[in-house]
Image (cartoon, rainbow, N blue to C red; front, top):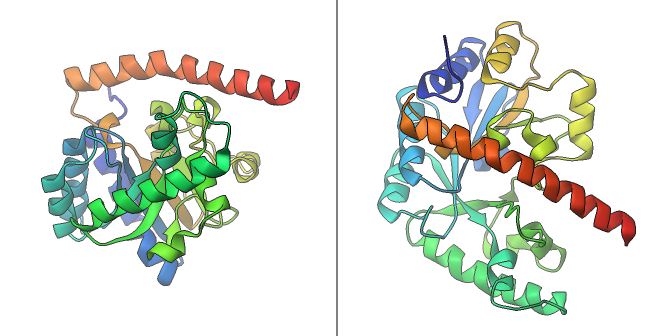
Amino acid sequence: MQFDFTLDIYKKILLCFKTKGYEFQTFSEYLTKPKEKVILLRNDVDRMPENALILASIQKSFEIMGSYYFRTVETSMNEDIIKEIAGMGHEIGYHYENLDTVAKGFRSVKNKNHLLDMGILDFQTQLKRLRELAPIETICMHGSPISKFNNKDLWKKFDYTDFGIIGESYIDIDFNEVLYLTDTGRRWDGFNVSVRDKINGQQMIWEKNGMVFKTSFDIINAIDNDLLPSKIMMTFHPQRWNQLNSIWCKELILQNIKNPVKKLLIHFRDLNWLIA
């Protein structure tokens, strides 16, 4: 019996894509010179950076490059690991959460304009920290599911290109032509239990075309049968991918607890919107 979200299954996904002639690009490479049949490997390092190093090493052994987005919190930002992953040739990006971070310093936020001003200052500070370790050209919003603030709102007032950033992974991809697959919720159809890691309207378009997969085995089967489009962004959360051991079991249990909670959050936020 095979179990999902193991390193063996991770390797199999990558090898299946290679066998079918897909090329791999980092997000920054795709923005400047996109290939026609391509996989964008996005790795959101929310925690357990040592797992990110394992995935980066696997990709390197397959001559594949990916993009690794690190938060600037203790659970994610390991300077030695960031340098090592960058040294392999992978892209390092900033997994920003500045509105959520600065909001924690207030009992209540009545002036959102002030929050945005504080957020951009924090963005500059944290971006500078990461750039001391590796070049940073692209960014990716961290969802912060329990926060009432969407970190992406920072760009309603400011422009990330003013800080030498060429792209934001939720904003600068045409998801009408690029299929978005994410392992959020420890499943590949987790957009139903995701507060922010989803593409909304575009997701429904892909659903109508049958591009919804629950397990990695479903994806592998779709690859083998040439059912997938030519351009795909796949988001991996490295903490979810482990050998079949106690860490794998812990991640499975924790995610099965978290998913119903996140579904309730989505329900109550939708209800508040309807009431408002």
